[in-house]
Image (cartoon, rainbow, N blue to C red):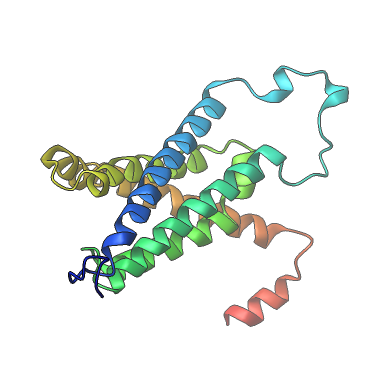
Length: 197
């Protein structure tokens, strides 16, 4: 491809500014997720602020603020899948298998475990989201400032703490979700036995 002066240029160069913008948006989004999760776990619950008459009914499964958080997480995971695609195309360095497996686990956790856990303010869901957010918050500066040795160092060191905590919390949350599903009166238990056996 030639630029307007007739010089050869790389087709990926114009996209670099788009990818940088995506990285900045993702960094901001994960920072916002961390702020929401920490504020929800520190501040008293809504029931301590409102009169019982005005609270939502117990029949609603997931509140609207939880849905907004899950939507934001879905968008941020979409950005992560774009990066995994860039790794597959050779545009970014990274472990493709790890990226695919990690983000499939995150999406399944996002769909199956987090909705109920966020409503009940379950500690394992808080740990999952804090570990995800901290991992990503310290990962994106390396993409935004690729020549920064501090950003690279933090990107390599922080996951040594956040990955084990997050993986344990994800496994615990998945176990609890499975136990809740298994004990549910709404599910035909024999169907699940037939599926898994």
